[in-house]
Length: 297
Image (tube, rainbow, N blue to C red; front, top):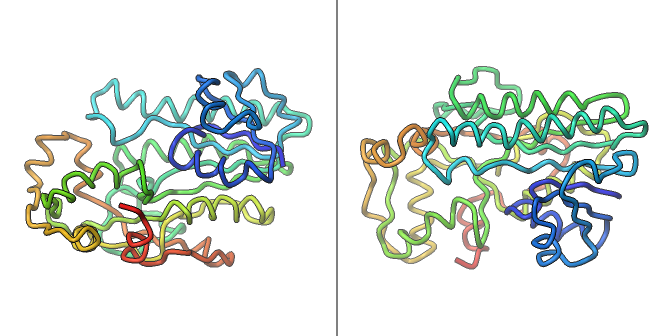
């Protein structure tokens, strides 16, 4: 297939390009064409604008681009960057799809479990409607609404609401490891908040599964079936590293350090991937202990 990928040099994008490169014709949208060539070689085509892409000659669009939500304090300007980096490009992609005579048959669009907003420990799947109205929901809701405009008789749209992606390098785990390796890890706040996670291998497999099943469309939670509380996460990560985890971080300290962004650390969601499981997808890593053991930390 002929696949256009945005956000290809990020954690998930890199994994997908590496998975698909031997089997498909990949085009990557990036501001830095040289970086793409250095990362993936010359068999991956790099374009710097959508005007360089003939959407009549693309089968699948995979939209992963977006400013990291957890890299910087949420100032007003940073919140604008987080939103617009997702919304503007998605709107442009959808416009290109709609204008094509023979448009891509599939749009695989990233989202996040932050769509649900902060929740209690209740297990929630894709049918859940009681969203908590906060910034993380607002980002994802508009992002998904824009992507769904591409839905037509010729184009199906699949939205993947990603949990915390576990990878050997990069992502949320990379930010946690230095403290935990020094034995300075600990629960955050009460530790009762749920963390919905997924191993990078399963993320790649989920995207590929949806790519290979043209009958599937709609929203899919891309999370392992067994979410854990922050207390459980802390215990298992410390155990994996052979270190103590005796230094909890009080909620007040988290708020002082991170401001509004602390919400994504102090609150969570217990998300269940019902749609993927019902479609026959099999997770390689169902439990956090096994997922952590598989990573070269």
